[in-house]
Length: 259
Length: 311
Image (cartoon, rainbow over all chains, first blue to last red; front, side, top):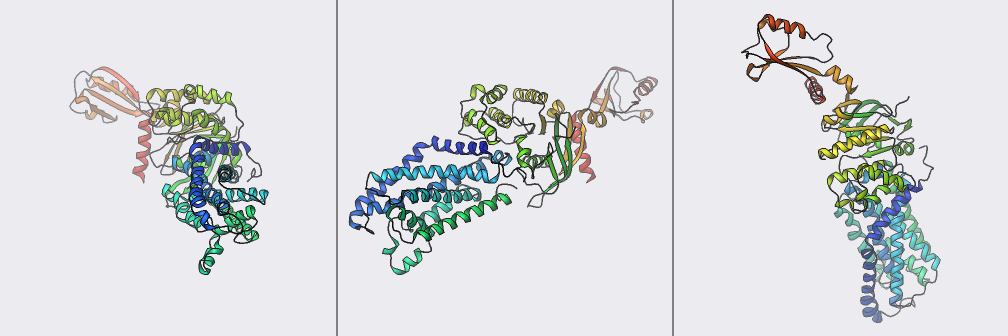
């Protein structure tokens, strides 16, 4: 394609700000809901159950669950925002405008995923701020934490984008986030270290990719995790690459976008 | 001058096996209004959708102002505006936001003055702060046109632009289309309102079952395929047409009070004088006469049904 090298910044910004304006319109729902949810988690797990749990790896239970809670929300928000963002134009029919615009597949993905990831990162940081009201939080590697947060948000936003294109209706849109990602997240060491599980369950947990993602993020907070940071980064990179490959294939074939 | 849109041997077969377009060859001239007519499912929307990048082409080549829609899609698409058949609009944005978004999406920097002009031209200025979902169907149709014009396209596709709109709005849209044409925009419209094509089009293409069966200037088409009719209101009703008049294509209507003679519009010698003399010879007198030409609709129906009969 003659002009593939050209970057259409006006198109990208138009899509990005269009998506961000949806976030702004639903600001109350977008920001207050995760804050309330986090407060509830802290009331139940931090205040009610936490004192009976004792420290984990030298970290109070309240502080221990913070990275996992942030990841839980970032996974969910990234998937929901990105999938909804691209599914709505398909549902309402306005996708015609996107398909007929002089914009490349890369630019479309960049804009949608960028907007979804931005929202997730913002919400993640708000949860971090909310959590700090309940428990002292010491972040050992703040730069790593920030980079990791952004990468996870991008990876799950890409996955959400794929789900949004794949889904033929709102039921399918919720299928993977609700029935696969949420259970895997709860079993992925958000509220516990997999080291406390019996042998078989610990081994089974190692097949859950979420374990690696939560562990890597926790490492940036506490300097330790269920698995080594190298392995976590490898899983994250692999997940990102797989999502990128699927998105590339979707645009190359027009899968569920063009007839 | 090279055509603004050039379609060469374009084919499209959907995964279902439906051959939507068969070997379409078409050139659209700069600055013309071209009407694409055809019954439902003929392939009109598929053709437009391929040109605009919404449907993947099969074989063949499409170029917009020399830019291939695949190889040079950015330049090609930047020149095109599309008003779709269905009212596909964002619901929660304001009119101003959604029209401005379209301009940005097509790669242009913000230009509030242009957006204002477009909204004023379409009588949408007062509604600029209204959410799209609060607008009537006719207003939503205007919003779609505004979105298509936001990036100042050189070619505008109107897919059934006045479907479901009232007469006043339809007249407004026709006026707008003419105004756009006057500024150099090429208009390609599909419609099933033959009146619309008759009113506006410079050239007409007829598509049926994926085949472009005819492309002609409107005036030439009406001249070549149009029928004319001479109606004579008789002094005394006739029970039947006399055998002496068998050489003419005559019929009786209104209980034998009107004698109709049908002839080709482009026919040089209509034989009307001879017919009138012959009537006089036979003592058949008439008190009034009128002529009329068949409408584009009658031509279209005739064309499509002729093809139906031939297949």
